[in-house]
Image (cartoon, rainbow, N blue to C red; front, side, top):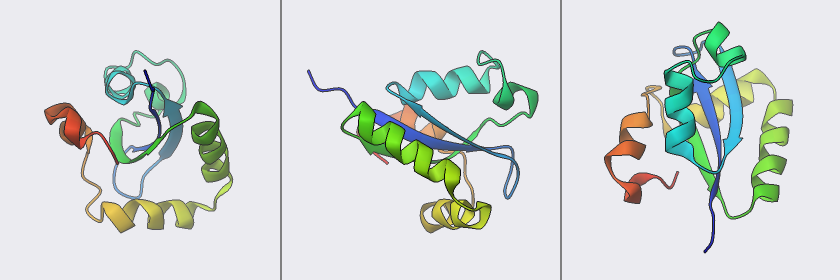
Length: 104
């Protein structure tokens, strides 16, 4: 059975604090962030809004992408978010509404 991996960006609000992470279970991981089950940065700074995600076919690919995004300038990250989500909507409801909508 093939597993999927995700790179995601959370925000505290539009143009707010950003967090980049990687997971093999996007719905569960975002739920953990939203419910302060993940100690650390997102809990401390209330970074709970899923504003961007992308699917990868391997853990290696996802981890490589996460590391690259973390090196990006802030403006590039904002442009990436706004290219697919110009209103900075919380995408969590989309990924929980239907498994078909999980692909980013």
